[in-house]
Length: 329
Image (cartoon, rainbow, N blue to C red; front, side, top):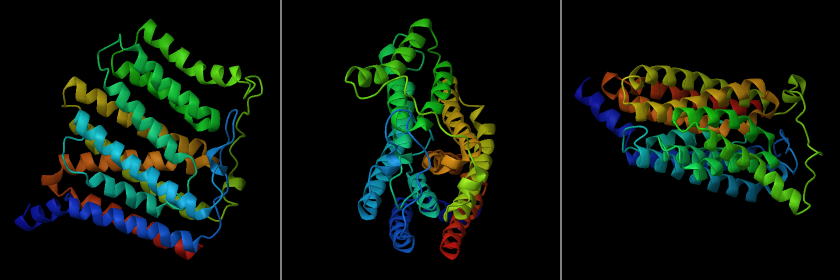
């Protein structure tokens, strides 16, 4: 790499460029809110309660809550990296990448739909599992992980799909024992038991999700721009994830376990976007967060091998997705 390329790479990882991306994404989301004056069509449902899709009716309040939640997600991403050296960098540029991905995804940064809660819960759950690496006696944190996922599933069935992922995470953290699995089971049952005890739900009156329907997805005005953005994120995540995997295999056991759980969450979210496509908007925020973290790790591992080229291509692709969403509306 030339001296100019090294300087440009440092700029892409700088706090100044990160703040520029964050502010530009916030402005773009506000402009998109004015452009798309109709709220997104509810996609998911709760197993027993009302889905977060319909919690907030005011577009402006929904946008504000969504932006606040995305700031919390960005903070959790930084905290996860700083506490466990997940991405092996002190740069916070991946938060800027995440905000750009959100702004380029129709309705992901213009209104609250519950997907933000999924990202917050999953990031917190990852932090809890990371904290008990090779500590199988820490059953209370395992209980809390599955309690959070089960509580989310009460209002949005998509949370339940991550229960197997975090069981795999327990295996990766080397805490699989009979006690931890019993703690996980109790954590899953406790939210339902508490709500049933207060007479708020009837466990037998479960609302099973409807089968995905392509006609229902593409009847929505945001379907094509949303699909274009998700495909871009899936391709970016696949590239960065595979490139990182080559380097991660040389890490120590602890780092491999941490990055393995990050990869498992990303793969599961990508598959859910494809399988449960009717509810794709619910998963896209977490997909963006995990892909942004993979991009941050990629920039750390391949900084001296012109890694900036892939990043620039990704940012330009998301700019194209944002423009396409305006042309399509």
